[in-house]
Image (cartoon, rainbow, N blue to C red; front, side):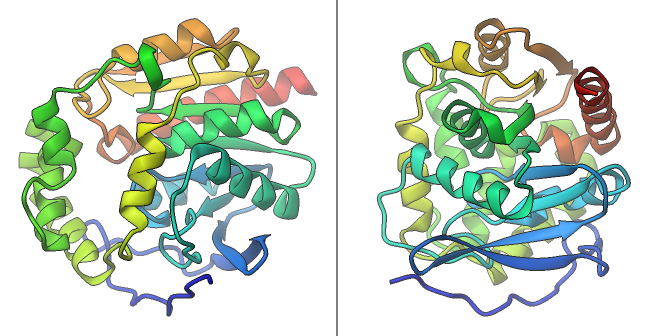
Length: 295
């Protein structure tokens, strides 16, 4: 039985910024009784954005205005997150990738550009492998191949990512922010952390869903299948990322045919929030090159 949440309040996220009011939200049936929320903003070629562990479409709040100037952004609340239905676990990457495929089939049947970050980048890898005709181009941010190839984070950093001993959602996310953002950037932007913590306090991940997503991450492994990815691929990675050490980005670039890698110097795991201008610039360059070659 799928759980259908009420629409969350509209408390501003990240320094008072709000989700664009000219956007729309659609529900897409991905399985019997399971509907996922997709937040659409902008016009142009379709770009599916897949956020990371425990985060909904608001993860891309700092990027959505600029991105929507160039593309029809389809921002996914993954299964169990945000306004999407939750189903009992366990989840795996194949399930989450097939969810994303159903969204593309419904809203962009000719295929879409795909940008996935962190766990969303893992889902994007499986999507490109399992449904190659639906992925016109791929951008993988702060993610890795998993499995035996993975460059593992320091266990102490992973413990912080998971909230340490905190049982309160707000406190757990405050702990996680110690490793999600690059230290100096975090200290210079305390309002970002405060707003993110408030958001988690008022929009906690539903019981069981975070664990189900974490299990999918733990079993993620595309190492042997990365050469199957056909979509033109750009890898973006912050050099100061301690959640997903930079060596993981290098491995993706090495294993995916023709992939390009761009480092974001001094940026952490949340590079796309720490440096939204550079993020949009690199996406724009990559996707325009792909569009030009395909045309």
